[in-house]
Length: 309
Length: 312
Figure 1 (tube, one colour):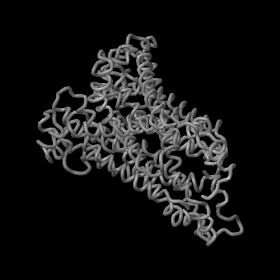
Figure 2 (cartoon, rainbow over the protein chains, first blue to last red):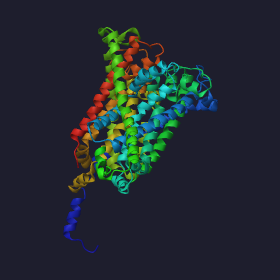
Figure 3 (spheres, helix red, strand yellow):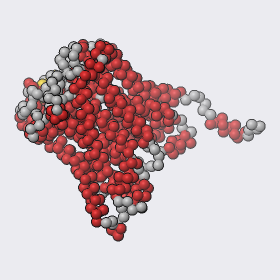
Figure 4 (cartoon, rainbow over the protein chains, first blue to last red):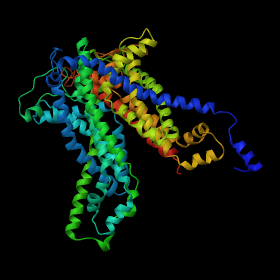
């Protein structure tokens, strides 16, 4: 720099702040602390449960995963909960995902923009905000009662439990799928119509593939929610305490008494004995592995979905 | 919604396809629409079943039973004030924790963090959001209660509304953070650039420009979070004790019950309270109350967004 004009020196001087921005620095530290609080909570929670659960996994090993429920802490295991949670996951997937995706396609692509459609969208948004325990009451008074009337056991079985959770996650599937469909640019639709595709062909061959990772994210999030929900299941009649498996056939499993991993956590957490405290922590570790895995899959899918058109 | 795709509707009458193709299209439309009908059906079923059994409940008891020294459904004491006070205490303390921390995390992620920090930190918030509430309830009971609540307030009991409320607050942080971050990121960069162009610092830009522009979204986040704290069940059911019922209390350091936890703990013994006993029917009365309150809050949030949303 050979020579700087007097003007540029004056301008640069006035642009340079006179003092350090202490207020801004303090604020930034506070904001980072707020974030760290959440991160620290996750860490403390996981390590606290791990340290409590460690003796159980050391002494029992796989036995804890393969034993049935028992009032004797030395024998109690989560096998029935794993089975229940797995069956619920399958049933919810079969019921909620086709129904939810169909609804979102209808709302986004087919429905006319009239009062009924707006009511429908508002209704779905509100269903997403209804407390989960209220869905349990719906399950109790509708699904359990209907199954009992139809003679399917006493109605408190995996079918009514899975139906209850299906209704619970349906709004989540619809909302996330709708957002994924909305993110597909309309140029893609127009290109499809332009080459003579029918409406359904455009949806099936162009929109669904383009929105697939967004839709998948919603599905996995909904599934993880269904696997972690406790309140609806205990209201709709999952067993607290122990029970013996009714028969061996799949039909008996579906219509007999049932439990699920989060229900076992709740049941054991209420018991005063110290041994059950360790068992609760061990069951929590199993539950966390399942739900955190599901969430991690969702996050990976979401990051792939964040593409710009 | 349909309005967004208006330009992409299939062409009109002169270009309709073959009859078989139109039949297929009509069939697809009916199948898809039936999914939409189901969601309406669910809402109707919720309202009708809750309202019917809640009406049976009110008919089965003497209305004076709704005011009693406490909530002991099996003894015929249905004191609503006990549960409403418990719910207000839990929701209040939880929001006291979740609103500032969630909002601060959102400001950092939206205004300060580099894209790389954002990509690494956000998933952790999302994992916190994915922790099942019953797990947080056990954590509130076995870790927060002895290490935080009783450390600060030596008189606090092992089961306390305070511990439960802190657990609910932790669960609510990610909700507040993610909705308000979305609202702030939706504020166009041109507003920030204009502010910097006038010589404003980052702190000034954040508080005088970005936050006012995003206020509707942030209000919606807060309202939805309140609705969430009112509806949270398992944390309170595990950590606040009072499984059999609770005396009317305003002490957050002792056990207590909320609307949701009362439903869960009554249903826990649901083998005993089946049929038409008024204890069983009271489940649905509480459910109807919860449904009404959260519906009002959710509608309020969406109305608020619509009324104050500015188009940029």
